[in-house]
Amino acid sequence: MKLIIESGATKTDWCAIFSDGSVRRIKSEGINLTLTQGDAFDQLLRKAVAALNPSGESISEVHCYAAGLVQPRTSGNIEYASDLLGAARAVCGHKPGITAILGTGSNSCLYDGENIVRNVRSGGFILGDEGSAACLGKMFLSDYLKGLVPAEVAEPFGAAFKADYMTVVENVYKKDAPSRYLGSFSPWILEWYGKNEYVTALVQDNFRRFIERALSRYETDKYPVGIVGSFGYVCRDIFREVAEPYGISISEIVEAPIEGLLKYHKD
Image 1 (cartoon, rainbow, N blue to C red):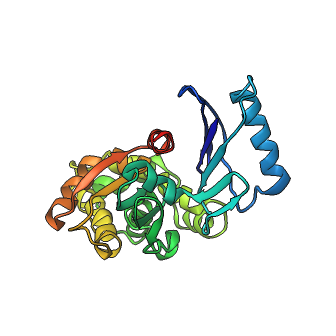
Image 2: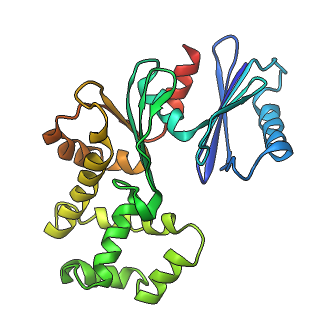
């Protein structure tokens, strides 16, 4: 049996591939491998295996992909790898290509068919994360607090959210999960896409920044680009439209990597 684990901040997909080719799945809370190690991770692993594998088939491989893991490592038959490598294997398979994550945050890499060979660092929500839901929220809130958002949009936004200066500053600089807070505004902002000139330009500029500051640093004329992430998936038509003038070939845009990872590890 092969066990595939794909974990984000809020949830984890556990998938078992049995020797007969069948697959079983369960979900659990998210795992942060920088915080959940040793006995704590082993306990989660045993609990998942008991639920997935009641027949007791021996485990030949475990592949764990998780956000926040910078350096991949192997311990026994367990491979620990980043969510970025998981995304690359999901959309590129065993072929080389360029991969981008567009979710709450963003990231990108050049992949050789097995491993990441180049990574333009994201910088996080303060120094980067262009193209992400958090970056869109940050751009919008910055304009809103400075009175630069047109009244047509600013007034209903103010009615829908408590977004006065002190509340925004407290959530961004003092509370936990500021990136998630910034990204939480993106669904509301996207409702105005195509209806308001300011919002339409803002959404496109967010993706344009990601293309110019990240994707264009790779050989996009040589390799296709695969996108993984819920924000990129929701905005897939917009992203394709923005990317077209740059001559970027988008191979696929998927909401989550787990299906691609199952195929990768089955092959």
